[in-house]
Length: 305
Image 1: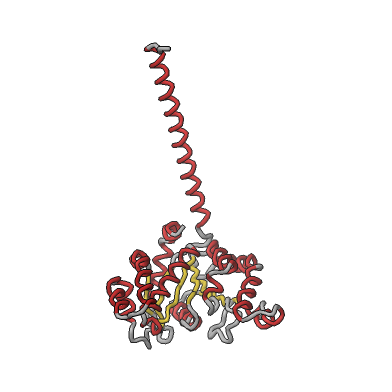
Image 2: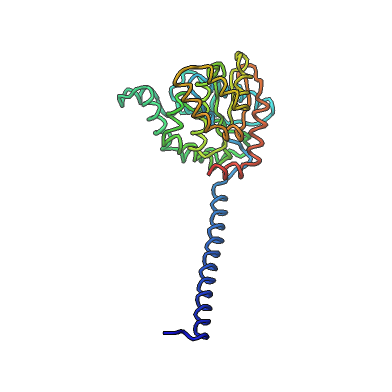
């Protein structure tokens, strides 16, 4: 059946009208989604933007506890207020006086013996027990109005905190109150091998994306390190790291060299500095970097979501 000219024109108009209505509906949905995203961004921002929360992470023996001790001293010298939290239930001596200590409420050795656990299992269980009362910790921190820094010292066994549900819960809870930055401590003397260096970088990258928080690489023990300039050069210049791998004729070096290709973009954006937890060298630079992140925190957090 042949459609008359007027009917055909009307059909075309109806089709166009339907298309325009669908497009209009899609545009309205996009605007609604954009508004929802803006609201979600506001919800993700901490309640207290004045206080900065520094979560100290790193491999066993990298010098986290000594770093926290020196950091407290440097903050005090600037007439700033800090609040120290120790989350390592197994540490014998923190070297500093924590304001809140997991050991005050959870006895590591009792957890180990009563549950027939090994050292790492006892640390993980202790963190789990601590996280069950995280609401009380949050309440304490929310009432601290005049703090400049909250510094969290994590367990020596990095994976126990960074890859556990309790570690993520604790980190997320703190980041709801204050702008939070991951401070990843790297033992420079141990990084004279490019394989060790790359392992640290991959670990730092994975933690940053898991925690979804800004991260600063802190190269520690520069007072005793002969290779600090070399490590910094590896961060700045990808080719120099590849040259170091070529000098190692083994499978692991070849494998690490291939993996390091993933880190090129990471190196371009990551913030880093060198410090000595013994002499205090580099701590001013670190605090300046943290202050820059605090100012730009909204963008930093959104970029990692």
